[in-house]
Image 1 (cartoon, rainbow, N blue to C red):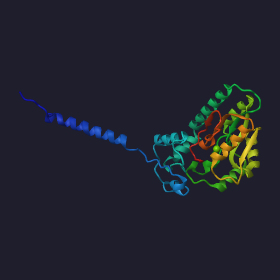
Image 2: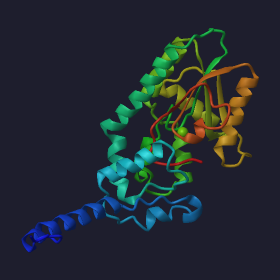
Image 3: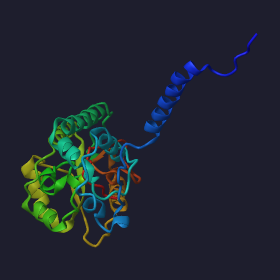
Image 4: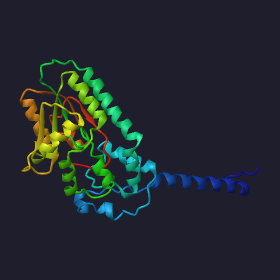
Length: 275
Ligand SMILES: [Mg+2]
């Protein structure tokens, strides 16, 4: 009786093909499809990641969608400039239906939350709103500067602010109307500087924000870090007797740092990162 421990020669070919297939599958799953470059401002010296890769081939939409998810969830931090490969993706997102849908979901959930609150109606219930790319849209500026692919142009952005022509982010404007109708006081806390108060007031009003409890602008003497400034201003509100029922911004630096507010809402913004 012959005991066959080894496979017969005619069985080796399909076995080898199966092994080859397994090797290919493992390799595909283990190899990143795209090296998504996340360049910190400190490391890049200010936008190197956007210039050295300016001629990069477009990345697959799925890779850029994953990058955007990482940004929106605050898993990707400290980045300066969108990956050059994703410029087409980000512009398509910002100008297309997906951005509108994403904003609508944020505003709808915020409105449902606000309408479900047990409100005292004592004039001390406050909702903090950021200004840039939250109450107002800076899409006209970013459409002119590569949707975050080009380095930030402070001179041009200051001109944009001074012109006071930014449109409202319409989903947030609709939410604003609902908050006022509920008796919630709106407090704008913005990273814009105090010398920009006049065009900011003009722009907010022309965009449809006709009233507010406070408009807090950053003193020019303060450094660039947003979290201590914004959380400090929220603390002043609490100390003054306000109850911050909601806080909404397009940057995580608008939302983190105690007191954050009873609930926070992140407006989508894959174009830039503010620490
Ligand atoms: Mg903002």
